[in-house]
Image (cartoon, rainbow, N blue to C red; front, side, top):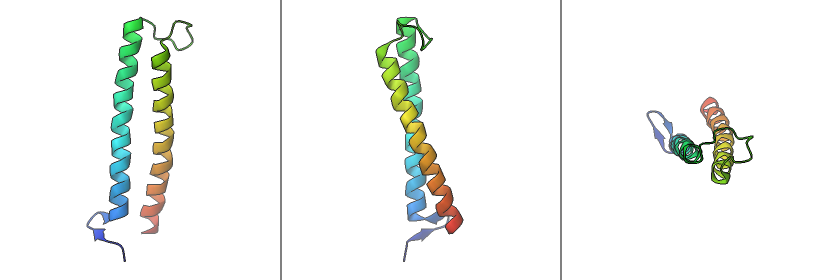
Length: 82
């Protein structure tokens, strides 16, 4: 038997916490990307002088956003099943 709180199962709460933490990390990455772009004075990804670090941070951010989408779908399925 799963532990249940007022707002759902403990698993749902952990999943919601994980999703919130990942969104926080996305915001941090966005800030880091903007800083790198400002340092280089290049804001267009298609420019050859666009900072490599900003490109790598963008890739990490995009992967996190994709992961968040999968986790949100899972959370939705769990909530509907409950």
